Image (cartoon, rainbow, N blue to C red; front, side, top):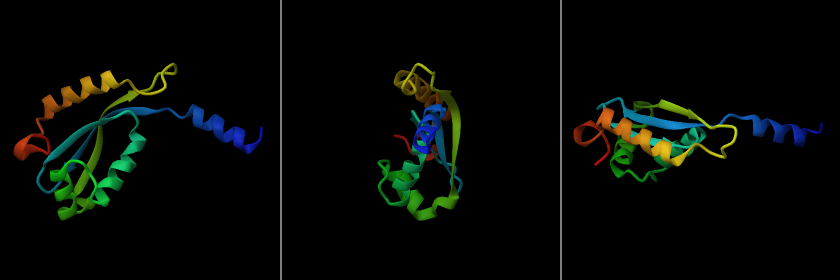
Length: 114
């Protein structure tokens, strides 16, 4: 098998995992809770924060003020894509996000959600 075919096959075999993640400001304990159909997109989230482009302005302000070393990103719940699905289910992610928002209550002084 040539290298191109090998790479395509390896790509097809990569397990896609999505779910809920939390960005925690380790200076003040504030949390930002979000979902993603693919955790590999977290590199894009970090990129937007590092370049002042994140949609949550309060999180962006603190990230810029305190720096990336004062934030932790952790996966709270992981959903693996089924073989028959092309991506992690949107409805399942919405349900899980609601659950984690309810559990962590990242509002006001506790987080970056309004």
